[in-house]
Length: 288
Image 1 (cartoon, rainbow, N blue to C red):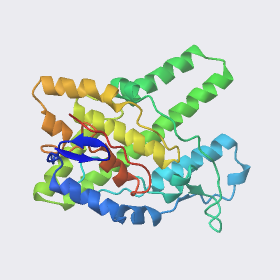
Image 2 (image 1 turned 180 degrees about the horizontal axis):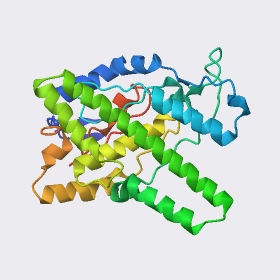
Image 3 (image 1 turned 30 degrees about the vertical axis):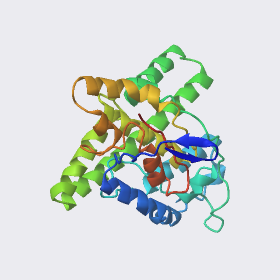
């Protein structure tokens, strides 16, 4: 029993639940390795001489399209989640694009930021389910120009998300072709966890983690810095189901002993630090 600052406490050895490999990645992030990579890619560029003559919506879609196509896909050996922020300008709560290369810091579109997406809906319905809702909405609002315009924009956004997702699958396929042994097998697992989500509903805990993370990173990549909300609520059903079926244990969920996902949110702070180049935020959640 020790005493200090007017309190008594019992010393104990803190359990080490994350693998040495995950800790090494965290250390690399702390040293600024990934932050420097992000700083090297300030923003996406829109080189269209007619940009200023376009409508607000056309301009915005062109900017998002540039981000999706120019996003630097970073896949780091040792990570188990696909998705990492690449444009430094996004940290300034602004859409990370430039229409004037002489003034890349110019704000083309500000962002709302600090929003909390409906992750639970994405996990249960998938983007496919949301896409179906859009189609139903278009049928129900036939003749309502304003409503149809809104729904059409939602569909455009969904298509950008699909394209972004496809770019990651293609990049992982290249990793699989260019690696071997344990590294190659790891990338095969990463691809399997990413293949269906977030377009389809998540079927297990690891898909749920990947789905939430990919959506989180994509939203942040366009400057809309989002929050994770209550991952303990929307991820718990997947964790419990897998645990009850014997698919995953507490230690496997809490650390990365088998699949390596920084699950049960203990390592979410590590993942967030990786993705935002150790310049954004870190969420530390304890477990019992």
